[in-house]
Amino acid sequence: MEPVSDPPDPAVLKAELAALQAQTRAARKHLASVLADLSEAQERLGSHAMQQLLEANEQLVLDAVRSREVADSTAVLLAELTRSSELDALTSLPNRLLLIDRFSQGLTNARRHDGRLALLFLDLDGFKQINDTLGHPVGDEVLRAVSACLVGCVRQIDTVCRLGGDEFVVLLPEVSDAADPGVVAQKLMDALAMLTHVGKVPVSVRASIGISVYPDDADNVEQLVDCADRAMYRSKRSGGGRYSFFSSACGARPDP
Image 1 (cartoon, helix red, strand yellow):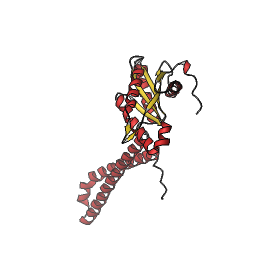
Image 2 (cartoon, rainbow, N blue to C red):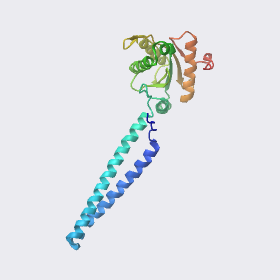
Image 3 (cartoon, rainbow, N blue to C red):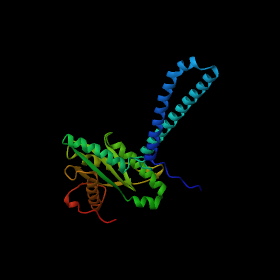
Image 4 (tube, rainbow, N blue to C red):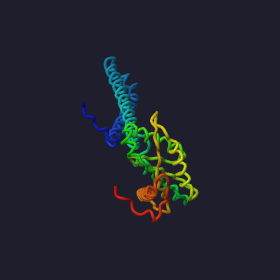
C-alpha cells in the first residue's frame, strides 16, 4: 500500500497564492505597456520584427492566463482545506476549532447587547456497549444519526459540534431566558429517544447533558466547556438520561 501523503499546509498554499497573484498583476501591467507601444512600433519596424514582437506579446498573454488559472485553482484548494480542517471527519459537524470561532462571534454579540449564551455538553449513555456488541461500523452510524438528530433540533444560529468519541457540544449564542437551555436539552433528549434503529439494526440512545451559561458560569469557551462537562457528569452520576445546569454542587470532573 502506498503511503498516504499529508495534505498541503494551508499557510504554504496561501503564500503561494499571494505570489501567483502578484505575478499575474505584474504580467497584466507589462502587457498594457506593450499594447500601448504597439502602434508606434508598427510604424518603425519591418514585418519580420513586427511578427517577433506579436509572438512575444502572445506568449506573454498565455503566461498571464496560465498564472491566473493556477492562482484560481490554488485559491479553491485553499478554501477546501480550510473548510475540511474545521469539520469532523466522521459526522461533518463543526469541530472544536470552528466551535471556538463561533463562540467568539457569539461572545462579542452577547457582550455588546448585555446578553447570554449557553453551552450544552452531551455524552451518550452506554455508547461503549453499542460498539462492543454491535461493532464499530454500527457505532459510527449511530454517531452520524445522532449528529443529524441534534442538528434537526436546534436553530440555524446554533452550532452543534462533535468534540470526539461520543461527546458533543451545542452552542446557543442567543439565550433570552434562563430556562431556555433546559428546554433545548429536553428537546434533544426526547429526539434521541425516538432514534430506535440505524438502518435495520435496533438501537437505544440516551444522553446525559450538562449546561453552562455566559456570563453566569464563565466568560470564555474553555471554562464554559469545563463547567458544562462537570454538569454533564452530575447527570451521569444521577443515572443518565437527564440534564443538569452547572453549579458548585457539580464538583470536579472525574478522572477518566
